[in-house]
Length: 577
Image 1 (cartoon, rainbow, N blue to C red):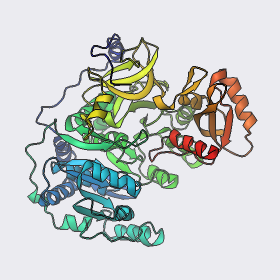
Image 2: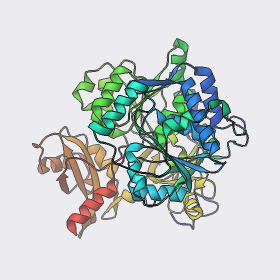
Image 3: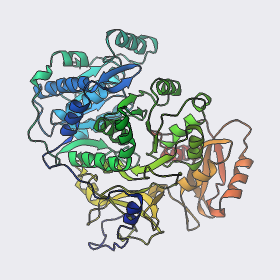
Image 4: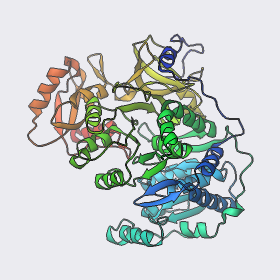
């Protein structure tokens, strides 16, 4: 998409999804709170309402809403004591441990802007994000302190460091920290001058001294959410309090009835928070929404550790499980998980990447749950579309536009295509970011003149408003003039009983320009290249069939489980260099 789009683009679908909303009994227009509201009000209302109920559990240790209230005030008091003021950025770099929600809420209650940081970043990636955001402070887990130290210079003014077990109680906390440091040796030696421990920060800061900022409104920036960097240099999406509050209200319209049932029974639903909270999907749908609805957030520090995840699941059976396809698939192929009791699981929500129908069917057979697939991006806070909770089967679509959200399928000239035709998905709504931090040109390039954010994803809208995502624009393979979308091929090939998962890219071909190549993770060594190609021949039309097969032990993925096609392309280029 270039900058030469028409100022008056053609728009003609006229919200065809409204009839579906009406048929489902859903309300399309959301009611936003007053302009002088913010996420701070969301937090404080929940703290007052849920008090002594459990807010978060991690590795068997728990904290109540009242404790989160007190501890987050202490964090806010400390940050305010440093002289930080509205507009200043504070980076938080942790896996899913009890300190994370306390730190995040503390930053926001101080009236500051949160910068979510992936703790698995390399030194170079961390330096870029801290420098780009102009962060004044960094709150981090000690496991990754050396990553910051290795930058070799003072990037932020204040550093707070915590151990994994620092909020798990005296005895349990000591044991967890000892195992992490000395048994598993997960904490490389570091020496960061003038850093403060998380415990010392809390000890020196009294919650009674907290002064709620009076100048924070829905219009203010709450979070700088950096994109995953899979499309170039990581950019900070400026998410306002309005963006995030709107997405909570929108999500409640689609999911709220399930949580209402728990309220009627006087029960607390458990949200299994396996996806890292620094990722926007988990941040909003697990963290913020969980607090908004008074849920128990069951924190899993490492979602790739299936044994620990399953142990947490058994101890606190979840009601709501947001995950990505790779995690659903891993659990659906785990014998212990298959044999467990899933009777409390009410909502399984897929996001972050396309959910494969084969995985969805396995999941339904094991848990009795239909995976409700949704779609969103960092730039949309994140939920832009979702399947309604009343869905009776896995649709394979990303659902309907969220309440008060417009979706347009747009061609390269900026005009909306006809229903049923492919185009780039555009999103317009109260959850769409203010823009990219300090990148006015990138912001302009990502938006149409009439306010649609251009996602870079290719989709199709049906006449009932349901949207099917086909692929990333840049992942498209051009075979003799025909467009081949890797997700479509992967969906089909994942149906082979011997294929655990697969990734497809285009490779150069003298005759066709490009042809598909498939990377396969197989269940055992008996699966041959010939069998894979035969399956493709049986299930895919000619130009979509992979012509090359490579067996690998593991697909490259982001920290939230997305298959990284760019890494597959890099692997291929290196082999052919």
